[in-house]
Image (cartoon, rainbow, N blue to C red; front, side):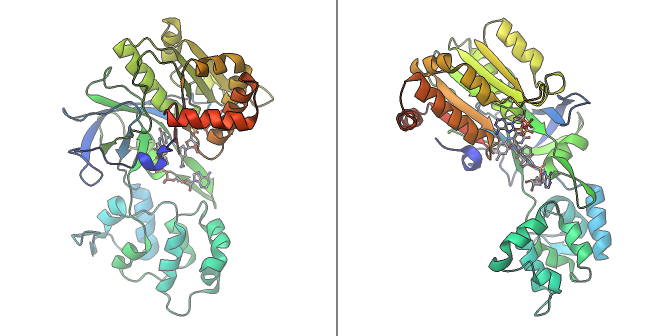
Length: 391
Ligand SMILES: Cc1cc2nc3c(=O)[nH]c(=O)nc-3n(C[C@H](O)[C@H](O)[C@H](O)COP(=O)(O)OP(=O)(O)OC[C@H]3O[C@@H](n4cnc5c(N)ncnc54)[C@H](O)[C@@H]3O)c2cc1C
Ligand SMILES: NC(=O)c1ccc[n+]([C@@H]2O[C@H](COP(=O)([O-])OP(=O)(O)OC[C@H]3O[C@@H](n4cnc5c(N)ncnc54)[C@H](OP(=O)(O)O)[C@@H]3O)[C@@H](O)[C@H]2O)c1
């Protein structure tokens, strides 16, 4: 199994458009999928492709965001710069400081490395509170400090240290594109690529914050606007070559995205393999992403089995792995029939818990031990029948 956190970072072979030369795509659709009373804002984005731009379900789309105007202004104000100062970008091309802060520098979440670079400007005498965040011995303290903080917090707390606009290029990381699992099949939408994006918003250290790219998509990318994008190949997350092979898909939250693509692909091709989807979110009435489409797929037989786990619809949390356990015998029977097992979404907890549940299902189904189940899963991985796209 290859986790695609890194694999998805492979450039698409021979692609005309890349992260350094993105395609300026028109946003065709930007719709909210979650209800207004949801705790989450998850959106469906459709982007236009130029002829010749191709992708396969399982691939990702890279989106190049810019920083918010207000965030740029806050930084300029805190540093006493106007924005018209001239600086050299990462390729030594002269641009305005305003442009650098808008499109080239990551002024969002603070990186720990930025603290060390920032402190270098203080010579031998950094302020004591800054000194306490430096070096390997203070790593944990520095991690705690940067959590929920952005560059603006650092320069507000330690004013007067940055004196030259060019210094920002040593302190700040590059503003990088973000990856999103593709949620569409090109067999169904030849000139479009779709994604499912959770808009990251939170309040930390008394400021309202938002994720740079998801915030850009959520707030400043209406239909008709443009976004620079590129396609990223991910050969580690693919439908079976045999269209009649059964597939089991575990996709809570935005993890649903590639499975919409898989299902649309199988539907468009008339593939005969059985399809089983497990989807989980907080509440059925506000968070059932692509509900109508999946129910229609179930009705017309494309989705052989559809299970949902709405964690907050009842007192006790119910997750996708609980539904797997409830359907243990059938799940094992599918695996014995050669089913491919796919997981997409949260890497930190969900993917690990789902793997534990899968091992348990295999052990119970085969009347064996967890050790035997681990061997069974290892064989599935070898046959590329256990694939994950987790982030
Ligand atoms: C292969 C791959 C596929 C992906 N697919 C999808 C997808 O289909 N849909 C999707 O929505 N995302 C997906 N992601 C995640 C996506 O790439 C971005 O990481 C995500 O949208 C956040 O980016 P951002 O620029 O909005 O936020 P950033 O500006 O990068 O900020 C996010 C950071 O904010 C901080 N943060 C977040 N919440 C809090 C909090 N409550 N308190 C303090 N700090 C906080 C954390 O440090 C977090 O890492 C995928 C990632 C990969 C690698
Ligand atoms: N880097 C970023 O800032 C960023 C931005 C966007 C998305 N993401 C990541 O993208 C992934 C998807 O996010 P999302 O908001 O769409 O969905 P999510 O957080 O994965 O939540 C989807 C469903 O999964 C449930 N869940 C929580 N813990 C679980 C577990 N251990 N096992 C199984 N299910 C579990 C949730 O329940 P409860 O909530 O009720 O517990 C909810 O019902 C997550 O990794 C998220 O962190 C990251």
